[in-house]
Length: 467
Image (cartoon, rainbow, N blue to C red; front, side, top):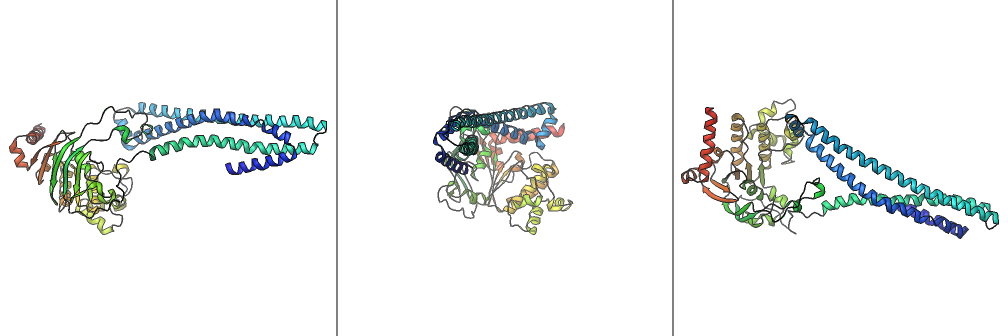
């Protein structure tokens, strides 16, 4: 559009100059009046466009978080639907208002450009008419000029409008490049090789770790103004953690909430990088290999597994897209969930709903375990999968987990200490340090933190049974 309009302006001006240079200069005398509204309104439109995008992002975030299944249910359970409706109406009204203001500014801008073109045409007619009366030019020349002026102001108006459009478009580019220019927290080293299939030896070598500060890991424009700069360095979550887990062995991480158990587990698949020290698999620093190849060999079953709003088949194929029907069935059998899936009307093609809400907690866990079995990783990380389940579901998942752990190196985050009984080693974590380690019997005999946690948990369970 800019190129074609520029060519049109150049060709029309050349023709006008050949016919009558005085009237041509007169027609161009209004050119500054085209630029003036562009500079004034363009700056304001840029600000309004930026505000509109911010408000749209805020409203979309509200809709995603509050109007989904979980958010809507939470609002109903706490009897706050009116407040949520009011919050949505408030943001929607702000989006509407900014849209109206933008429309008014754009309409005013076009009116101003139309007025300038009309004034320029009128001046050409007035001066050209006087020149015709004086005999300086012919009537035909004036008529030709009038036609040329109309053709000249149209591309000039479009060129002026293009500048405004570009000013608004640059706001979009600013937001896009703001994200693209944010440094990657976790990046592959240049020329990093593939991670070969590991035997499964995991080593933490004097690991210190702290999470990145908020302004280092996110952008204020994406946080709806809720991202406040943090003062001072973030505190260490892990402090001088060292241990070695041999292939095929299971280590249970035990400790109070916030001790750093999950942080230890997240460093193995390199979801975060250590601040000091190193995490090694088969002697290879996880930072020295490609992330995708590393994560192919590490499987994770979180406490609250996420299932996509898709069929059971599609959720399983996420782990291995080339898996056959037989592979899917065998994985579901090993996870003790095939009988349930086979009894569903659509079988493997049953849609599980958003985050798997059509399945119970235990069923989601077993689907997640089947997905992990399809992946067939050498190293498994289990964030206690039975902490919020009934006894029947817990028993089924415990049986499925035995299949997962067979022949694999495993790190188990244990909230129920009953799951630590079968671990080869128990690591007791407190305030980011490993304060105790050993077998269940050894740690009970030491009378330390593990013994205190164990007796407290079982005393509470006994009290609940008596109640």
